Length: 298
Image (cartoon, rainbow, N blue to C red; front, side):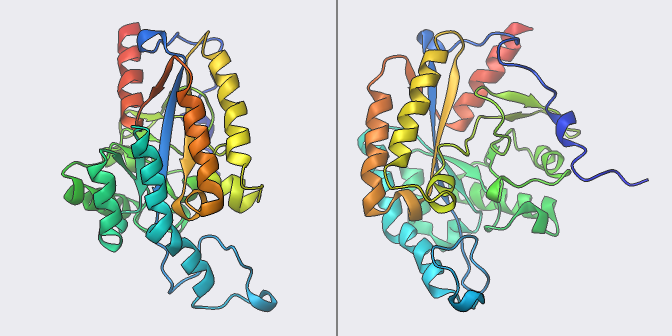
């Protein structure tokens, strides 16, 4: 008898309400951790684009898809540098979610992220759903090795392309040494997930403050990241007085790095930094804090 697809999901994350779990505490009584994620990807003009700003003429997809490939390429040539400057000027840390192939394809971008002291986080080998990867173990290992060779350190975290996972992905990631994932957008605090290959933790990523969702999918006006981000932060800051929260801000250079959006992102950064009791951590810093809290509670 075959096991239904998706049967692993609930078993990996048993239900636990945020109001009835062991308490967590941030250093200095802080309320909110800001987690900045900058995503960079390799889009190959030899295949269909992961996303499109322009629909194909007459509804028939064509290759090469020059305008949509170039739309993404603008982010790597121009947009990334605006985001880098915005974060650097504010002395904010970031997690750099990158396809393994980015290390060679966009070496200058990766060098700048490394120089800025960003954490490197695995994001697939190229931008392809995990369901379409023929050998997940091999692809994960190759992605991690490309990052290790470039930075001198294997990534501890992973964000699957499009947040996609099969029933086997979490076990494969744990087997390869990944310690946390960003795919499980189900909580405001880290959550221990079940894996047959070792411990692995979900760090609160976001589809709410994510420019792919806001700008490319929902197609909101340019200031939506600021408006939604302020509302999101205000509530998390209020909630954080009782129990600490993580607020992820996920951006892509081809979306948030364009001239009509970058200013609103900068305003959001300034807004959250204008409050006391706010920490800016990378994914691995959040993980280390959570594991230490878990250990202390035993």
